[in-house]
Amino acid sequence: EAGVTQFPSHSVIEKGQTVTLRCDPISGHDNLYWYRRVMGKEIKFLLHFVKESKQDESGMPNNRFLAERTGGTYSTLKVQPAELEDSGVYFCASSQGTAGNEKLFFGSGTQLSVL
Amino acid sequence: AQSVSQHNHHVILSEAASLELGCNYSYGGTVNLFWYVQYPGQHLQLLLKYFSGDPLVKGIKGFEAEFIKSKFSFNLRKPSVQWSDTAEYFCAVNSMNTGFQKLVFGTGTRLLVSP
View 1 (cartoon, each protein chain N blue to C red):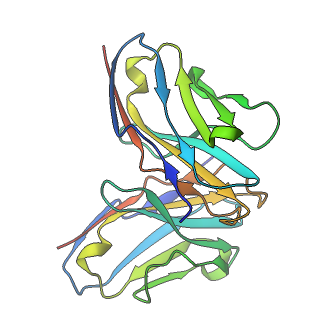
View 2: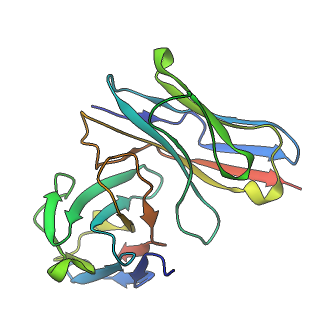
């Protein structure tokens, strides 16, 4: 069974540019999450999709971040325009249920460096 | 603010030594507790979880954790570590307060096991 895949694995961009991260969840997983880890700090929740609907986007830092999940399959996270403080590792995760105690399956992350 | 604290940021052990990684959280009420691990070059994966029942939880690879409600703690233990346990370990919590679909992570503990 294929796991959660993220693309690209690394991205280096200049301040002011736009970057789009992609996540393909495990097939059949309705729940898709984005998390971010800024260097040396905790992994922080960004948002949660159930199918194509945003269930909770309380962790999105500001309106420069836009997440979509058209058709309820893969998701994209766009940062426009990128700022230095956006650098970090962006993780995507997916799960089947919504009980809160189920296992999350994580992707390997996208390392974003904004110069 | 609700938070998860991991007291040890870096731990260095020799093979066969015993391991205990501390985790404390700041929520009251019903919580689900998790330990995730990220081996070098790999994605985050679930080690073990607690959501109800026996507070002593056993996970993969010989790890266990004990939920002590009165201390708001969920420490991870392993009696005898191996070189292959070298990884970063993350404690995480969700609760009714955070929303059960939102994990709150600690800052992680990097474990280095020397052969």
